[in-house]
Each structure stands twice: as C-alpha cells, then as structure tokens.
Image 1 (cartoon, one colour):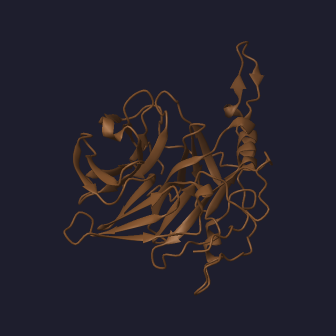
Image 2 (cartoon, rainbow, N blue to C red):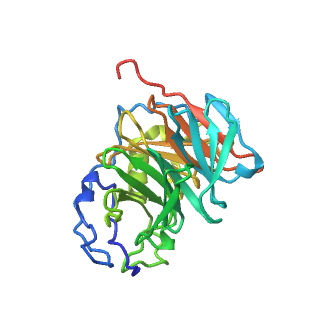
Image 3 (cartoon, rainbow, N blue to C red):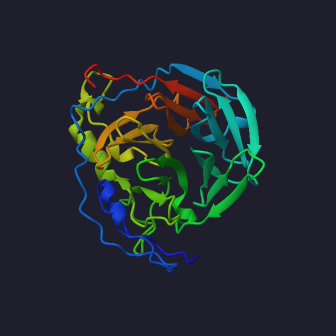
Length: 331
C-alpha cells in the first residue's frame, strides 16, 4: 500500500462524528483528504466525578518474569473470568485468572515482534503492532485457528500503542504515541503536539482517515486553566502555577467505559490518565503516582465498571492492578 500522509489534525478534541468523513475510496490505495468539522469544547466538566482511586488498587497481581514487559490486556472467557495479555516482544497470548493473577495458559499466534495492544471480540482476538499492522486471530485456541493480517496507512512514525474495541461501532480504536504526519510537518516546530486515535471498522477493514479524537497541548493548557486544584504549592505554602507545558502525553493504552461510553487514555510518559466524553470533551486529567504506575501500558473494563491496569516492570516485576468502580449514589 502506498504510504500517504494523513490529513492534519485540528486543535482541540474531535467529536465522534468525524467517522463519517475520509473513508478510502473503492479501489483507492491513497488516503483521502477530508474536510474536518469544527472541534468541540475541552474545558472539562466541573461536575464530573472521577470514579476510581488510582493510587489505591483493590488488588495487585505481580507477574512472572516473562511478563515484565507486559503491554496490552483484555477481558476474555465465558463468563469473563480471565485476562488475555501480551508482552511487546513475543507473539504469545497469556491467559491470567482475574481473581488470583495466576497464568493459566499460553498460546502462540506469530513471530516475535513489537506487539502493543490486544482485544478479544467474541471468539476472535485482535492484536496490533506499533507499526499499525493488525493481526486477526480467528477461532483462537481451536484446531482451526487462523491468522489474517491487515495493514493500515499509518506509518511507523505514528507508533501505535493502544487498542480498544468499540462495540457500538463494531470497530477497533488505535491510539498513537507518535504525532500524525502531515504534508507540512516540521520536526523542528516544538509547538507541535498532537496525539490521535483512529477507527478501524471490523466490517470494512479499512482505516477511517480522520481521527476519532485528538489531544494536543492546547487541550491540556485549557484544562489546567479551569481546574485550579491542579496547581502546585511551594515549600512556603504559596500557590505557584504548575507548568502544564511540560506535561507529556504519549498514549500507551485506551479503553471505553461500559457505563458512560467515556474514553480512558493512559500516557506512560507523564503518568497521566485522560477521560474524554463520547462527544470529545476532556472531562478529567488524573495524575498517576509513578511509584504505583511506573509504566501503565494496558487498560480494560469489566461490565460492572471494574478497571484493570497493566504496568510494565521498572526495577521490578510487571503488575496488573484492579480498581473498584466508585459510583455515586445518584448515578
């Protein structure tokens, strides 16, 4: 497939309606250059309640050495009693008991490579590489198991890190750690700072060329401006403004909350968790304690809202944390 740059991403966070633009034309190998609608507000919701205590896990699973570089994770089983996880070097899926943390079995699906995300959809498994290649494993674990590979127009510069399944759209979401490459990209421009998420419909297997959403520095600055509690206090007790310009955003995982439909996007660098509404509003920015979350690489939700987060090992084992859903009484 011809490698063509994607359309530039506008400022602010783009609404989900963007999916109606920019599909590949029948028989075309180049990317369309679609018109991009106006973005929506990113000021955040003053009444938003973040329902997790990210520094107080309900349960912690320390993983064996072979999973020190754990990356993606997903729920699987009937009922959903297991976590399916991968690590970013081997073509192996590990199945872990979600109550005990025990590795139950391992199944190979391909050669060694830089695997970043996994999603279980019915009897099938989808795995994405940082290069954006998607592995569709049909009838996973059965004798008739087969693997189909899909390429997307996203080049290695996009550096795909996160994978989620959007059941409402029956599509995968690919979260990119790298910046979108545009016709006028200037690597020396330090003001450039955009991280994008793209949709891959499972009916067409063609990547939508306009992002589902994009986060840039203006989003973060606006959020800090409207949320004074995020400001720092110096040693003398004086309030001093934090420097959100230095906040790093390199998406490492993405998941969709089963009750609200909100997007949860973690950034390993910067140790941040973003919550974005289905309409593209930046609802919350949660700073993560690096002592607990040294390298958050995977997110997954249970139907009741329970959240799982995988962390690659830094001077220690890889870990999976479970967080209870702290739902308000009137919700």
